[in-house]
Image (cartoon, helix red, strand yellow):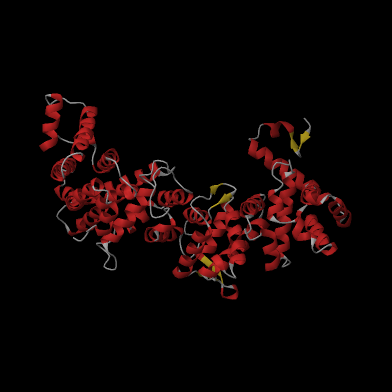
Amino acid sequence: MADIYGIDAQTYRHLPPEDQAAVREAYEDRLADQRTVDPGAVVDRILDAPSYETTAALVRELKDMSPENAQRVLQELEHRDPDAWPQVINTGALNDLQGTNYPQRGLRVLADAIALEHAAGRLDNDEISLLFGAGIAGFERTQANGARMLFGASNSEEMQAFERAMADYALDTFAGADRNSASHGTETTTTGVANIITKGLGSDYSGREALASAYADTDAGADGVQARSPEERAHIRTLLADKGSLYDDEPANPDPLAVLMRGVAEMYGDVEVGGTNLAVEFVNWAGENQEFFVENGILGNTTSDPRAEALGLLTTLHADAVFADLTDGYANGDQYAGDDSRKLGFLLSLTAFNGNNSHADSVTRSLDRYVDGLVDQVRQDPASQAAQDPLGRLEIVAPALLIAQASPYLGELASNEARVSGILRVLDVVSTGAGLIPAGGFAKFLTQTYGDINGLSDDQIKNGLRDYLTDAMSGSPEEREAALRDVVSMVEQQIQAEYGDVPVVAGAMTRRLEDNLYEMLVAIADNDVSGFLNTLNLDR
């Protein structure tokens, strides 16, 4: 049987599609290596094309060349007309190729040729700026998409080296920039170029890997690779947050902070500062700088933006380390347990308890496993000294769950219906409505409604609780507070029953509920969640 693309045709037809593509690419590369190219004639044809067609003409010319021959064409183009090089080869022009049926191989060869030019030292900082653009004057989206096309066109060794160099360039630029100047001053352009590069590197795994490595380490030249300082990393995070936006959620123009977070999430200890350590650092920073993750201080739980998604991925891939760090406040004399609860609560509000976050279920499962592990440690010997650490961690988790559910109600709760929904949402986390054993005023309410509380269905209890709270919200302050105390008492009884075989665990979980659940429900009823979070007392 005849060969096809250099191998037996039957063998080729039985290959998976991705392997067939690799065979075709290798065959085209071999043919390209054998072709001779006249760079002068190629440049003549490129420059003869209409001005709006020059980039497309270049990509078409390069599609049958090797990267080395393409590099010669780029050199001839620059020699012939130095002003033409940045006009023909820039991310905005690459973006304009979309929808034109341009040859993908031509773009791949161009990307590799640019990488070769950089490796040869023929791309200085000015030319890098012209290549990527600064995203100003409304060009950020087109330049960011063009950068993604450039970095994503090739996965060759030369391109990976170029990605690493550009990642270093971008993050070194951010690390050395003044925050105010980067936003409104003389460094707007240089950090704008770094921003476009960062967005572009998010196009594929190798680009994100390069970015995460540059974030962890800085190339110190003759001195070798050195870890970036925590201060440098924090400064980079802040400038990326400034440059990006919670609304940069389209693939063509991603949020640069979310791009970096995703790169860190995917990194595992292959640099001096391990990926897990960086993930934990990122989550702590998010909890301490919530203004970068919520709009106007209000957490809307109806959508999930790129930064929330990135936090979900960070937590999913490094869950054990993240949860361990955010629950060690009692064991670590340098930390305050309340800060841990607040940061953990904020993290969970954006991830586990945000139903629109694609990582919500995985974060929830990871948290459940972590809590179950703590309970198992205590169960082995509840009275031992070894049980004190997991008990302390459980005491931090309990109010974090409250905070996670309170955060979405930092906005207005003008109606009784909204307040009742808020209270029921919290109860769904700390208990299951159907699992509550009716008592006090709630038991009387159900008796009046159904005649007998024995044998009520789950739905009847849930609906009854909503009606009971709705009536209470319309009553006097005393009636409202009495109803909420009934609810808290029933929740405590349910937790005691769930962990009845290990009373100290039940005590650890309910101690914080006794201290805070009632105050939180009152805050929702009074539309003062912000005041509750600001005064939350987590002292032991």
